[in-house]
Length: 409
Image (cartoon, rainbow, N blue to C red; front, side):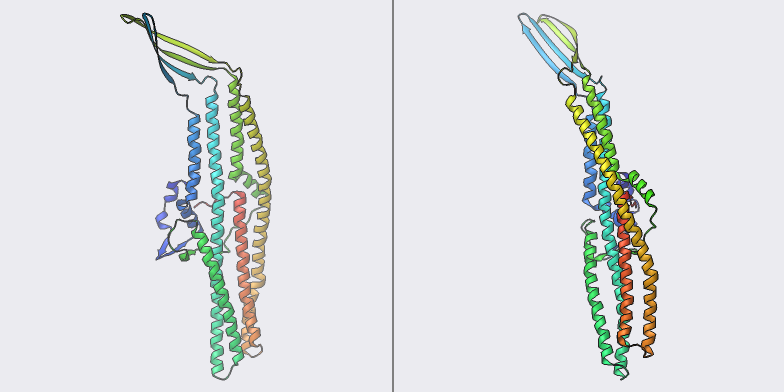
């Protein structure tokens, strides 16, 4: 829970964001920081833990003493009693209940960390979608600028009688296709901006959000065996079940103490005698609760059943964690490898293909269709690389979630 303490989050907050009117530019780390400070779900998780903490403090308190006053009037004698009764924690059950309550609080914190990590993963995926939409827009605009220059050259040649109308119209047709693609990408960008803005408090227009970074950014993927070991050690949901199992084991030990006799002591003052001649003294009473009918059998059975259930859930989760890590690892590693291989085998060669086609068109060896095809292949390769890089980034984000890796600002 310390990873989202208000003091730690507030440090440097004023310098995180750059504003320009309604525009907001932020990195992934800054987006996570802003979400942790603004989104109501974070406060929901914090208050859930506080509820458990309050219940834990209640379980560790001694039973309240009772105060009683009794007056007996029989004939000439009047007896007054002022007594205080206190239950004695001689069975050691109160300490065990306090220990179990502390374990419950720690488990609640781990569950909150797990829920927060899932929420952060959704934000990071939305951030990756925005990065992809931005870079696709930039790539399409670059391709569109190249075609606009070509259309300008073809129009000038046509006016001078050195070029054909067909070449210009065919190039303008290609421009129209890219314009349509830009419109589609603009919709994707607005969608990604709206999704990302939903993680923050209501404020500026989501259309002003700009993600900083590149979709291809990402660290190398370590070995699978190391990742599985890290996942078992880091996953907060697995840790929560381990703590819950320990809590129920402690609850059982506390329930077993109900087999022991309980004790209470009563002490106070007594006044007795006729109203004209009264005398004072003291009263002391020791009470022993004999565990004859309720020896904690039901409480022990309940705690043992809950412990076994939690242990089974933990074993099932361990199997699921290993499966999730293997799947996410395979996707992240293969998408990263595929993107690197595609960059070297296709994107670089596509750029060379466009240069060759341009030179051949100017020499009259190629027609406009061959030139436009080369431009289309080059642009398609760049877009395909972006899609592969985005897929690798999404897979890496899922891998971080699978191993419980926190993205700490």
